[in-house]
Length: 78
Image 1 (cartoon, helix red, strand yellow):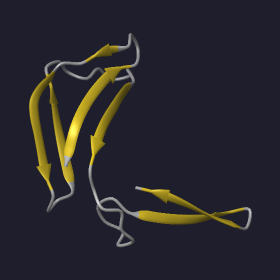
Image 2: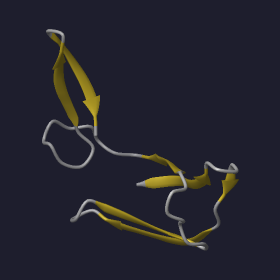
Image 3: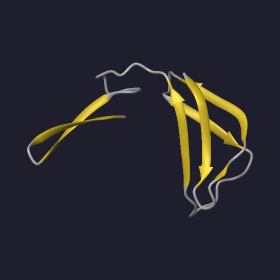
């Protein structure tokens, strides 16, 4: 469940206006954001959100994964 959402234009640090359309499709593991303005190719944007989820080891949703680096096992969440 997402409780806070913000889209920032990194070119000028402007916060984009959101139209309030957040389509949380848990069966397809998608989240759609609709902004009032169109994204421009070549610009950089930052999407920030607070959310609540259960961390799992099932390689779907919010999950823990690992990789080896210089013989050391490291963990990431995706």
